[in-house]
Length: 330
Image 1: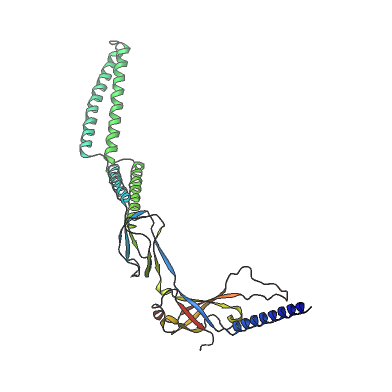
Image 2: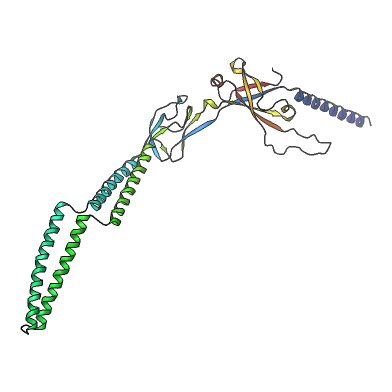
């Protein structure tokens, strides 16, 4: 019996001590007014559009670079080969277009005119022969077959002469409009291919997309950079902000656009002013949110984002360093 009573008293004492400790913890949480956060900055990746080997690295980690400054130079042997092909295609297409637009050369025109003149003489001779045999046939001096043969030669000479005249006219007036348009289209297509190669060649020089500080360089000289690969990371100094996690029972003391005082411990508690720009609830999983009275409902946690009032003062701060927010500080 005594052992049972002793056991009951021991459990009661332990339960009382536990409740006291829990109450102390809750009181401390309620009394907490100082919160620790982190100094953050936005990051940016420098990527390649086309694959190539790293030929030169012109910056080092920690360097401050300006927008448009060349950071890396790539080796692109395939682009050089394609450029030679594109230039050859452009030259060929330009020659085809000029030939279609201007027509034949002077020597070709001379040859065609001589050909037309020769066929004209043959036609005149064939026409005279045909006229002479036609009269002889009327007087029954020659058979019908002989006349038919001469007449066929006359028609052949006439057709050859007309074809040569048409060929000469085309040469003098240039090619058909459709042929000129086709040649012009081939020329523009070749120029487009050359411009595409020029754009690819411009990607040989990897430039900084914004003003930034180079944080990490992921490749070395001679290594292959695939398309879309992040070859370097940078920090945007003008995007400095401070992130804090505040519980639900304290978030009521803060509001958007409120000016707060911050301390930076590693800078000998340097004080700077910040402005609250956003307050949002953090995602939580498996939180107790029941309405039953025997279970304590857990508080939500809120992320508070603060930006410095003076960005120049904040640029000297190290990323991921601690920063202090005191809700009671004025």
